[in-house]
Image (cartoon, rainbow, N blue to C red; front, side, top):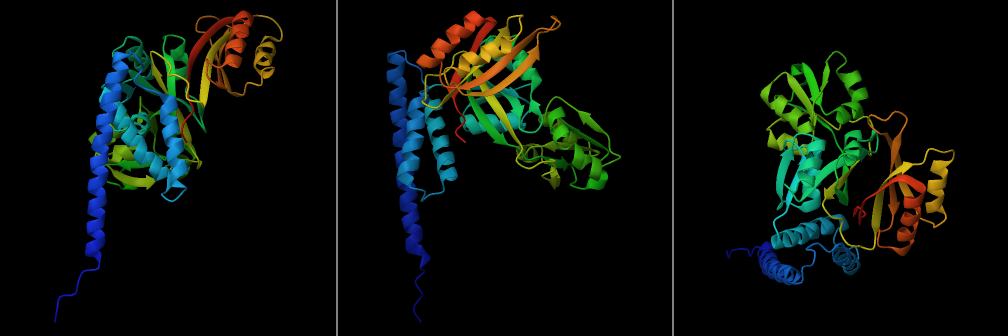
Length: 360
């Protein structure tokens, strides 16, 4: 009896041919990126062109016509684009460490896997590393959808002269992890203060007699859980793999839809992308209606304010600085005019940066 022909074989051969073609084209794209990098260096132009990248994503989504899953398409091309861009110049990135923190995850999501990542112990030190030029960029959390602003990030802007270069929104799922995967082995729960706050009700109901301890980061917590069988950490999915831990329970956050906004800081803000956000740091004059007068400058020009946050000035009782996010780029005419008026109307004015709005 003759052998039955495997019906999968020709399809698999076709897939192999397609894969080889994709690989060939990827190598060609990398060579083109190297040539662009060489030409930009000759002309002393910035390596990163946000407008060009946004045009690529928009074109791909349009030509795809929703045939290939869009989230996966963007993820694939984000890795390709960042790999090609980073091949033009090695990029160093500092994040709140150690490895496997949510800041680490956000950094990889933004830059892909080929950047040179450096874990730093505190958010303030990430700012200092960037300010002193020891790294190209830093990535830090600035606000959580449940717990609000990360005050150490806001306070660091008052101490360091850096610019916001981008933002990344990371969906947060908290995992309770330890050495064994068994809840009965837990004698102490550790994590950063924000995850502990985001899981307080779950912990109260399920581990009512177990103490909790706040540490510098979720990565530090995972390290402690790896070293002590009585310790459980609230950490990221990356921490499970990095520190070879077991999952006690997935999704221990109290509210679904939890997300954290991270910002990228560097020495210079990027050029206009077409969908941008601008951040300012303002001090108000000591007079009635000062805040209303300031906001009216933006309202009269139809500038969309997306966030405002106040922080006390250290050592100066009763004085506050205001962090403001608004839509648009500092190179836009209407923002140039508004900021000129703000400089006149405020006791303190600092442009923190203009940068592309998060892709998601």
